[in-house]
Image 1 (spheres, helix red, strand yellow):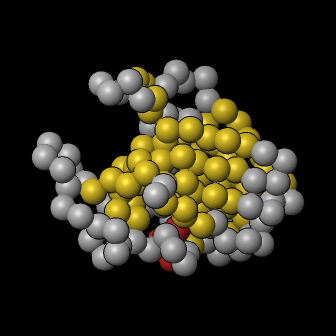
Image 2 (cartoon, rainbow, N blue to C red):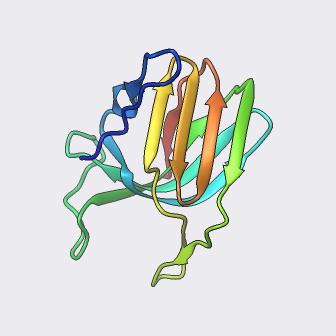
Length: 136
């Protein structure tokens, strides 16, 4: 697994999987399907990779490397969101769905969350931890 641990200006960084609710997912190989940015929130619609200790985990489907589940990574109650979308065109998967790549980097420094990928770059300032909501 590649590391998403980076030291920010304060010198105190942490891995995303140390956050409650994100310890049993793997974002680096999850597919970003959509990014929705609001005034005080940002949402990443994902085909989320589940680790084996996730209660929703099932063996990967034939031809797939991981167990995927449709989910949304949500950041709410932000005091500020710095959003830079990418100019990269999304890939279109064989089933016709759009694929904006992965969340390649996710850095946590206190109440600041910084995420990067082919889809763009986002820095979110919020005291509310991110959460994952699974599609039912």
